[in-house]
Image (cartoon, rainbow, N blue to C red; front, side, top):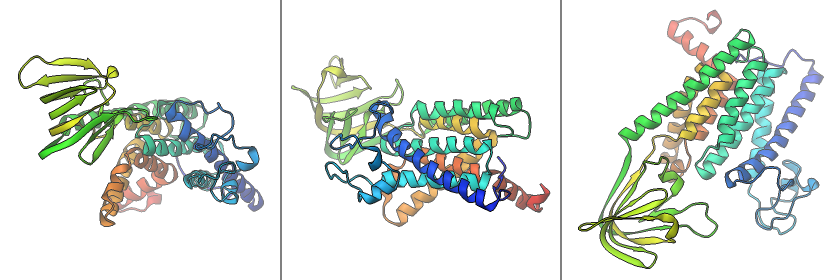
Length: 385
């Protein structure tokens, strides 16, 4: 998508539309906060109709729900119970508003900017959901891919200089390539780096419990913990615990190998007959262990679905650019966190937000960056390409 600056508009109209883009983006950001909170919990974004305080469930009236302004006037607190409301709500609103404004300034005022706003909203919502829950919901990824296909068919020259059906073909091809490339990375990475193995010098405590209010069981060993959704991404995934001792509810066993799946546990003694039990009937498991083997993912299938969305909006070139840009951004953040001695912070950020950032960079500057790169490689000026 070539930049189409809005400088041809009369100055007064340009400022009016810029103000609208900023305000509209902040309002969309307010709605995205609802999506980010409710969608992973299986809640409808329309029920309850009004936003509510997560602490006291007080439904927020319209005059207390004005984007940015209400948070500032209420000093980041609930007007009903006084509990502090995270500044991230303010950040999401402001970020979305600024991105919408940038899309207008860089792309101009035509149908392309509506497609860009749709993609930007998906990128913001998907990134924060991925950070919070390590998932990219299908409503964001495959819903976004469907929106990209529709945009390619309706918005003239969204991807290439051609008629609508050429854009639609490029959109479908980009979505297929985006999904396929990450699918290959996920499965090849599983073969190459498929397991994390921990061997302990002395027995370490381990447990599998589902705390009250938690969405899923949590596995803990030594000072590490992981949710089940991060461990079991496939039906074939197995968590293997070489248990010195194990207590399953009231039952205690020693010197066994426990093989856990998403819905069962197999007790394999050093000598004797193994036994498989449904996980649903077991409230807690704990004990000490000498070793653990845990499934490990190079990337997640949510990332593959997200790249289908990127490809549907912008085509195959954007797919390759986004993967490269996302990898560079991720490497830079990791190195920065290591330099700041905050290595654990880098590990908390999944790859989805980096891919989202790569897609946003493509939207604003991708084609220009490609021209600049090839001009350097060929020794020509970008205008000659």
